[in-house]
Length: 510
Image (cartoon, rainbow, N blue to C red; front, top):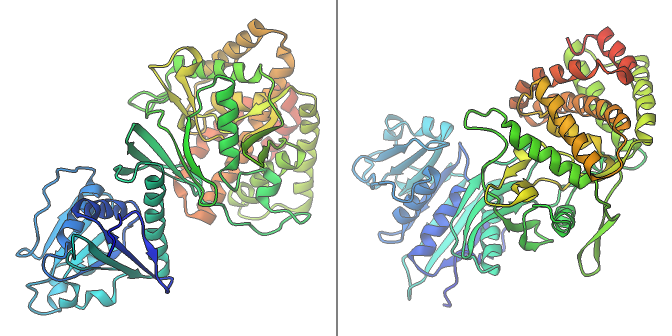
């Protein structure tokens, strides 16, 4: 038997089974920590194996990872039978070695624990738990210094576990096979992020498998096709390269795997545009808007080489993309607001009004748009110099389009309230930076700003309702009052007079 690390799993013949070999106790603990990254409330993990097989070692490492405390005291529940931990989600460690009868499980609160948290159960056969576990782990005592581990369970659970093991294998290939990992809060997308204590410093691991192709909805194209949403990591890699080439502070790429959708990148830290109370820091927002002015003052290529024989063509924020985004309001927010779908004549009137506004945008200045320049996606790098203090992330959906769009994204931040006077100061700072750098049509910019702010606000209102109804992400609904307030503010502009009349008639922003 040749020992290999936990980072090198070998798939078995059945899709619901994985087998791996752990070279030492450190590898066992690493496996426990890696499992903690993908377990969820409702998971029941059956830990089987003889005395000394490593069940408690694995469980202890998993619980410490959930708690984010490598020194957490995790006693064996051999005599208490169960030990609970206030983690997120809560963890329950059962040891049924001394269980007299399976009926005693009810008294121990097993069923409730399995509904509300993660259950780790040693000696599951004593209570018949292994039959209901969605993940079973059988450990064998080390043989010649190597521990054999078999993982089986439901296809969904094994899929999650397998992905975590694949991430560990990727880290090993990049020279970070033993690096500790911890979960980072993600965004509204299917992407996941982890902080990695890399051999040469902190890194971020982006887990972004290719998105499945959605249904064809219009002229043989999917929603993602029409809206130019990134479906692989290729656009992210390309835009990061382009930004860094021009001196902007996008994260450096340390390694990537195109087939698996994995990227290991520079960690720009956790400091952002908000203070400890979650309020905007005006000076940092101004630095960010001046960074946008610098981006919009540059010339950008239409395509970027990502790897030999692989180029990313930066899409245009064209009429089709603009339109399908504002249709989110008529398709989702309108029915939620009125309790009925829009009639054909209402939809056509809505699209006609927006079509005339998009005619104005056809004549506006075009530049590279990062698309989501708001507080979650702008980091503050205090140690950097000048414009490098503004760290840029989450730009995989970048396009070439009206430069005012990104300014609206920042100055009408969807996640935090920007007071009107602060918004006006940001617009003035942007215009001043553009005038200083060269020729700049401020009148045309402010007209485009009003249109793109209204377009983005309308899209987000519909998008938040869709996220709640289709993806179960009701937390986004709390931002709707803020977005309606931004729209009321923006609709005062003369260029939006017709749209203001329509929204007022419908009462959408009341």
